[in-house]
Amino acid sequence: MQSIQINTAPLIRNFATQIDNGRIQVTTKLGTQTLVRAAFARATFPSDVDLQTAFLADLVSRASPGATALLKDIAEQCIADQCAAVRQLISDGSGTRLNS
Image (tube, rainbow, N blue to C red; front, side, top):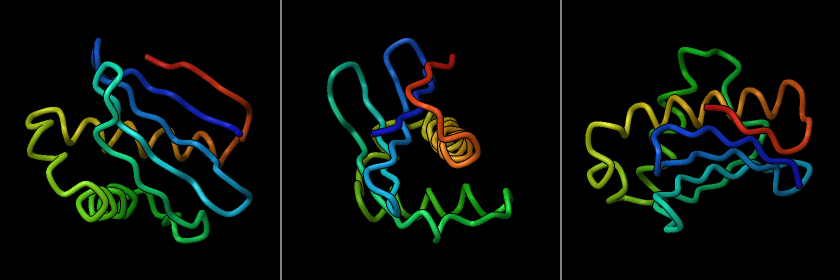
């Protein structure tokens, strides 16, 4: 299973994980607690960078309705970091990578 991790803040980590050949899961963790976990078909992720944030924001709001309110001011950065992690996972597909 390939995964990309981006440390958004000292206790907030965002992941994009390829869970099988056609599906990607995005996750946001606060410490050890999972706040967001949502999966989508890789083929549905927009190639247009301008549409990617809205795509993931909608996915997260449906999968974890209270997460955006809980994350407050950092929610937009979490979505942006999830987008970056998904793009990196799709573009190079190399194993686990830590970014900060």
